[in-house]
Image (cartoon, rainbow, N blue to C red):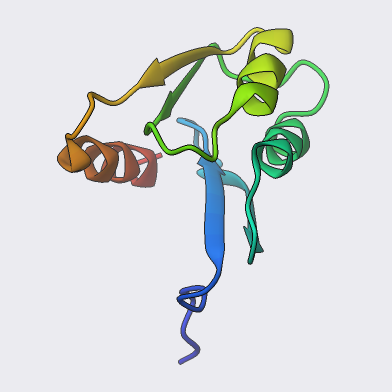
Length: 98
């Protein structure tokens, strides 16, 4: 069975929607930037398919370009509490239920 985890030097972004479809988009890169994550957001939710809310952690990868893109497609960002890594795990668990 193949390992589905990215290598340690790569970063994975997955966008899951609470729907019967589960994960709607994922991508892997060695050097993530705010611009890259903003582009992933547009690829995950083209046209009028964006959710109303996006639950995310406080990683620096979600910079101004990402926040601007989210606002442009009318997504309200919901941030996990500072220094609460268990909330990121909880968000991953919730999206796995979709």
